[in-house]
Length: 131
Image (cartoon, rainbow, N blue to C red; front, side):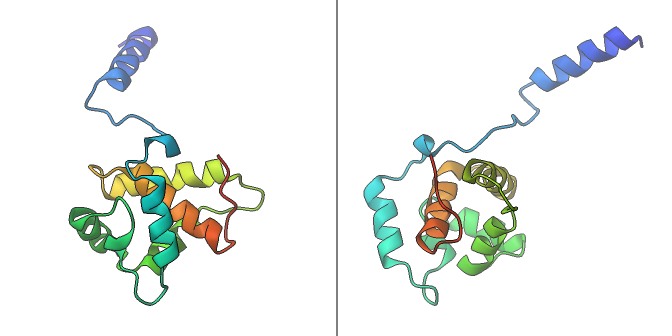
């Protein structure tokens, strides 16, 4: 196959709907209302809040996370913090977490989960959430 044919094939493969689209976090695509996020943040308790209490995380997402070794909110937030690098902007951190979460739970609204986790990190001074 010639180099041009290979490039054309690759371009077609990347455009194919069977290939996952590279996407980024967009807080405006969160399915939760501001009130839901505020309720979550106000009622959050480190010892009692469960994964399923996070907006956007339902039973199937909990199952996917547990299968991936994440069974507590602390572990999920730790995963988020794993994307924090010196000088990293919140957009970059949120994009990385969003993509990671969508790999773990592809059918979930990763925007909602990322939005909630990012605001939780902001609440506790871990990362400043910036739009």
